[in-house]
Amino acid sequence: MQYIDTHAHFDLCMEEGVGTESDLMAGLASSGVTHAVHVSIDAAGFSWAHDFALRHRQQGILFTLGIHPSSPAGKKELDDIDRYTEMVMNSDEAALLFGIGETGLDYYRMHRPKDEQQNSFEHQIHLAQKYHLPLIVHSRDATEDSLTIMKKYAPLHGIMHCFSEGAGYAKKFLDLGMYLSFAGNVTYKAAIKLQESAAYAPADRLLLETDAPFLSPIPLRGKKNKPEFVIHTYRYLAHLRKVEEQELTNQIHKNFLSLIRETLHQNPRRLT
Ligand SMILES: [Zn+2]
Image (cartoon, rainbow, N blue to C red; front, side, top):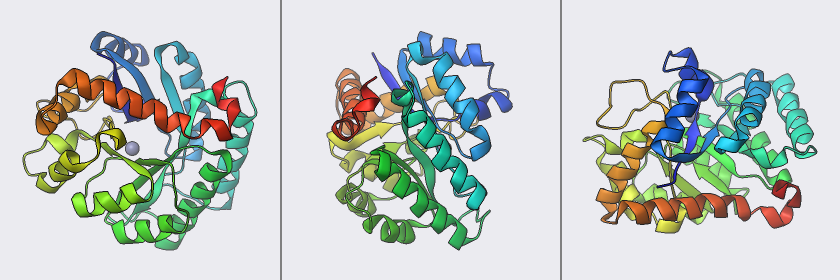
């Protein structure tokens, strides 16, 4: 099997004591996880993310550049992300940059004012479109505002990360061109509407992730999460969708590659 974790925070996993860098890498290899995307959440993490992907490019590690809606996003941070993205995209390592994000809106935590979150989100949508990179969206308790902003820029190429809405909203985000990525919380007993979305999503627009160190899937709920645990979410989803695990794994592998390829013709540098 070739599993993919489309969304993990390796730096936070280490800070949380989940394991050392080499533990986490060894866990991926022994579990059959052939690709994982390290997602950055603030400008301070950009160079670590970049170096981490460089260190482990042979193990299928890619990285993103993004400012999470809970992270500061003033002029300085927005300039930083522009500058860093330009630098990477003009380098030989452009292919390691998977996308822009995670960005979006988080009205649940509300660590930053709404207008700052919205401005940062639109800035990062522009940036993703400028370089034809997938956009990784975090939306929590802000579905309507996320949709309103995203509609302005449709069609979009990217991922609704840790998708947590029902099938009605799933359709709306799919219509904008987005892929839906499900995290470990889809395995939780109470997650009925989320399971409804995961059963409803078209096979060719589906991705899976851990969001490690958060949201460990059953049967590891309560433990801190790590990228190799994504295999449990695959198992659960295969069962939910009534397909063989091998079929699901192949399909998600294809989806992951086509999400990258959809933007390649616009941006041949990513082939290097
Ligand atoms: Zn995340």
